[in-house]
Length: 73
Length: 145
Image (cartoon, rainbow over all chains, first blue to last red; front, side):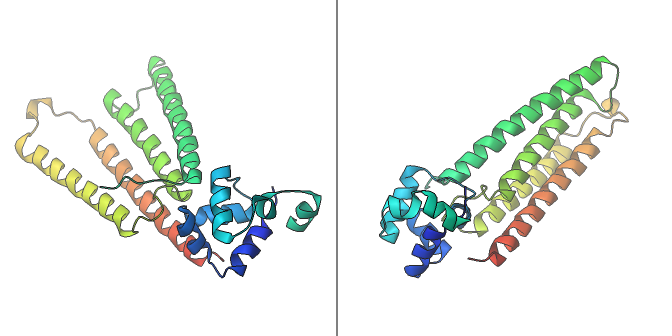
């Protein structure tokens, strides 16, 4: 699993730190960091919470196709 | 009092580490039984068992701290220190009460150094846990966002 750069850029676009996003969705900063680094595969429930906070769809942040896979490497 | 809610990654880490620590405990106990049956008695029986339990719980605590799964999100950082401090204080008071009021019969005193071993190991585990928590906190603070 590669890095989730789309999540990182969406968070940066909202001017949120990892800690602020983590507080908003009720997880630790380490969990957000692990998701962005590709070290942790979140549940659908957490994905939806993150999408709601960042104003994005699941597709936009978490769908992995060839194009996104290349971008993540 | 509000119950601590660990997040999903913390729960996964705690469950995995808990399972592994339990298997470590069972394995060490079986090895101890096997060693005992071959005549290898390195400590008093009850001390050995307690020592194995102590080591496994110490390993569990250390690994949970290093994985960042010791403290639930939204809990103030001072509370774990308060809990550890109060646990140590209760242990010290209990030890003092036991020594003062329930002094063991001198006739039962042996050359067994089990209590000293347990004291050193538990102190070492506590120190290692505190060190691990401190290192983890420093690492998290300096980690790039």
